[in-house]
Image (cartoon, rainbow, N blue to C red):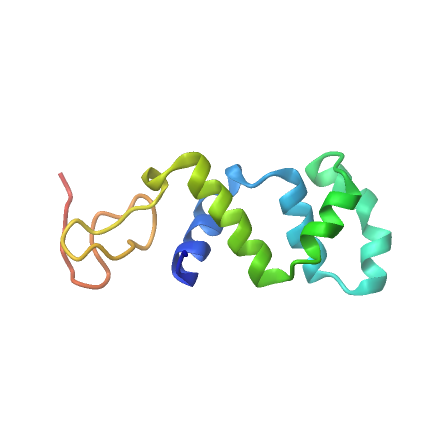
Length: 110
């Protein structure tokens, strides 16, 4: 089970790995009910044509569960290499490019 910090990290820094259907479902969760019906064609233009039934099923999971499901899929497909942990304290770095730990201050610049 991933921590909320890891879910946030993956969805924030690995946006190119989120599928169009997942992007659309995440957007739908932020829209009001009446906006959802009017918005599918706009979302199709932005994210490409998607299966609206699959998107609605994903959105029915709710925001937290959907985000966790997407992050789990990305982690399974791309492995631990997408996460940047401090070599000393093993906590998650702020970004994939970070080379100094925000928790223990360790610096692993070359």
